[in-house]
Image (cartoon, rainbow, N blue to C red; front, side, top):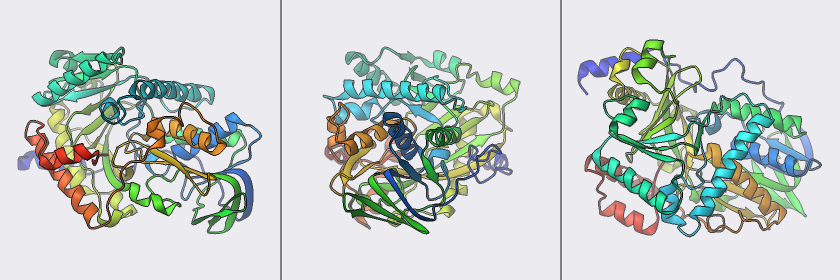
Length: 472
C-alpha cells in the first residue's frame, strides 16, 4: 500500500480502544460471587461461554429438578463468546463444503439438525426475552477474485444437487453490489436462512440471566484447577473450594482441557477485529446494506464483516496467528500490525468510506482443530462429557454441542449421538516444534494459493488428502 494510504489507515485507528466493542457496554451485568467452600450438585458445568451456558440452560429445561452449578474462571462471556463477529450460523460443520468433504453420507442430516438448532436459538431468544439484536439476515460469501466466483458457482451446483440450495441465491456482480457496494466484489452466494446476526455479548449475558432464573447456581471468577473421579461422581477443585458433582460437562474450549489427553486436539489461534464509528446516512447510502446480511470473502485468508444494530461496520479476520507452544495471554489480544493491515484492507474494500474512524480494535483466541468443526466425547467412565474445536463457528454450534454432551451424560442414544461426526475424533496436532512449523508452512501455502488463482501446492494437496488443515 502506498505511504499516503497507509498513513490514512493508521489515522483511522488513532482513537480505537483496545477492547471488544461488545464487552465495552455500560449494561454489562455485575459478576456473580466466587465460590468459597464446598458445593454439591447433580451437574457441574465448567465454562461460562456459550458452550457452558447452553449446557446449563438445556439441562434445566430437560429436568427442572436437576441441581446445576456453572463455574467460570473470569466473567460470563468474557472470552470468545464476547469477542466474535456475531455470526450465528446453522452449519454444524464449519460450512457446507467442509461437511460434504468429511461426512458426505450424513450431510443432509447434519444440515437438517443445524437448521433446527438455529431455529431453537431463535426460539430461546424470544422465550427468554434476550435483547441481543437477533436478525435472521443470512450471510453472503463474496467473490473478490475470478477463481472464487467459479468456486461459489460450483458450491451452489453441489448444494442444489443434494437438495440443499432452497434458501441460496447466486449473485452476479451487479446484484452483489446492489446488496453491498464495493468495487472489489465480483459476485456472491447468499444463504438467506442459514445465518443470523446478533450482539454476541448480550446473547451470553441473556443466557446467564435465563440460567439464574431457572435456578442454576453461577459462580464467576472461579477457575477449575483439577478434575478427578470421586466415587460415583466427580470432584473439581477451585481456588477457594471444591465441587462434588454426579456428572460434569466441560465447555472450556480454547483453554487447556481438564482432561489432559485432549490437549493435543486443539490449538489456540488468535483472531482480530475492528469496529467503526456509526455510519452517517450519507455513508450508509454509499454502501447500501439494506438487507443487513453478514458477509465473508472467499479467500483462504478471509475477512468477515457485518453491520451492527447501530450501523457500525465490524471488520475482522485475515490474520490467524498461532504462537509457539500454544501460548495464551491477554497481551496477545492486541496486535497493532494486524489492526493496521485490517484498516488498509477495509478502505480497499470500501474506498467511499475514506475518513471513517475505528472506535475499537481487539483480538481473542479461538479453539481450532484439524477438521474445523467440533468433536465430542466422555471421560472418567462416562461421568464427564466434553465438546471442543468449534474453530470460530461456535456461536450457533455450541448449542448443538450442549445437547450432545447432555445426551452422552444421560446415556441416551439419539440421532445426535449416532452421527459419525459425534462418534469420531479429528487428528491431533503433533507436538512442538512440529506443530508450529506445520502451521506456518500451511499458512504460507494458503497465502500463495490466494495469490495464485486458488491453485493449491503439493503441501496443501497432501494436507487435504489426509484430512488435516488450519483455519479460524
